[in-house]
Length: 88
Image 1 (cartoon, rainbow, N blue to C red):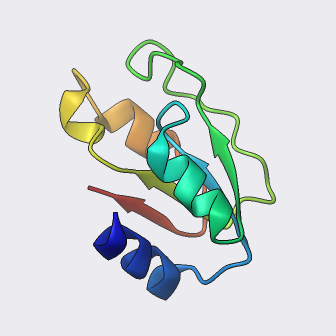
Image 2: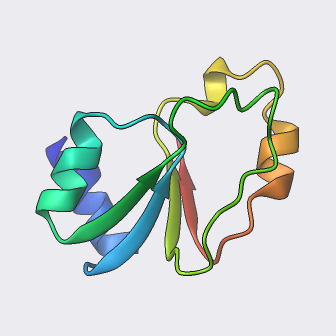
């Protein structure tokens, strides 16, 4: 996770609020330990419910290793309302 954390710090330095498109995971905890406030989707099926309620306080939306697993990522991508997002 070192390279991902380094990239995150360059794109959106802490303290910051991150909305991660995954359920809580080890990287969520690493972000928290590095002064990020982290929201997660809590297991929402993003193919079935692409209209996420992302809090206005969010500085960055992340989606690490999830987009390729969606049947159709376009509805989700179209509906992400954020200033910055990092998807891989």
